[in-house]
Image (tube, rainbow, N blue to C red; front, side, top):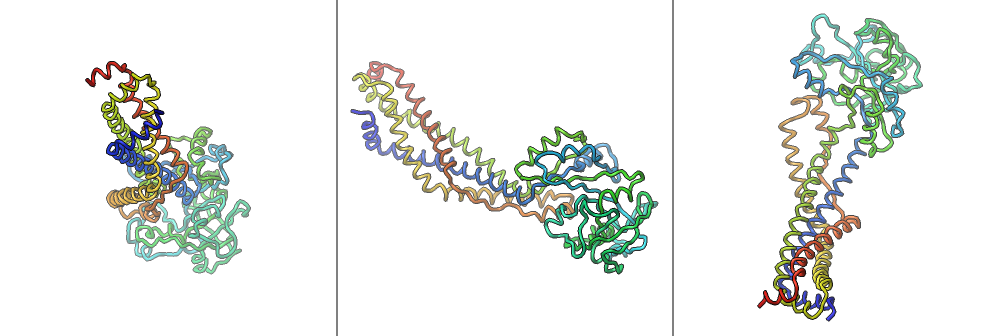
Length: 468
């Protein structure tokens, strides 16, 4: 009889073992399919998160490392400000992945013939940071040096906008400035007017010409933040880096406190970081390249945990399922030793006997695969929802316990405003199905091969004598 027909008759004759094997293969297939579907969904969600955060990478001082080193050495007080040399980062700007570059710098100034907007906490001197150490001048304004104001995140997301005039761009004339519309109203100023500021570092006075008025929707109402009036968005001004350097430095050297690189594609972020570190002479023990990593980790942290868990499930199920299946087939083969011995004694080739076992198992596996395919979408989505809900709950508990930037700190508030990914939709595509078929076929093949070799290496006489 043809070994294919024998395989079919064997499947029908051994209904109990066939059903057990079908259940095992269906469970293996469902878990492996769900694992791959969850991993693919997590990858897609991570890519969407990167797109949502934007393809920007910021070169800045590694504040976390700086604080750790200061704490270890017992140093106190405000750390020394470190500037970025333009020459050191010129090569990074030339990388193909870079779409635009925005050099940012900061300075402070006091009023000369313009009065700042004063908050209640500034007037009363209450709240942390309400005063300055003795001998230091209290700033009235913050000056933000930019290459292009329109490239600022606050400008892109709409929290900062120009309501009159134009923004500071590379085409802006020297000593041009953009100020808040409320500050302009309080001082009866308009576009085209001029005013003077005094630098808190050089004590030099500079005349600036207003080219635009801005409006900010930044919610900075907490007392601890508004206590320093010069940090109030209404007291912040925007100038070119060259204007700020002439005003705030003794030698007029243009430098930056941070550099923001906008990339053409969010998927190029990691490759860009590696290339930038390879070609630049920047001291990477002092500086770091940050691609909104804290925000990204908050968004994708739970789904990465789910993906990692699902990957472990795939490995565990594949190995454990394969061993269980191999044991089941081994027991089945041992029960059929007499059948195998008689067939070999009649001249049946060992390869055909192994082929019969493979056909039997693959036929059952094919039915299990169809069941898996029919129920895979529902199963994988259910697993995803359960795992993700658990991870989101744990992440929320961790944030509540640990915080970010200190309890009630500005950093914690900014991070809290970033939405966490709490939903993931899995889908079963051909790529996922192909992966399951490949894994399943390998499991079936190895599960059949190993038990068969144990029996088929014996000769027919030995098999029949053992039966007797």
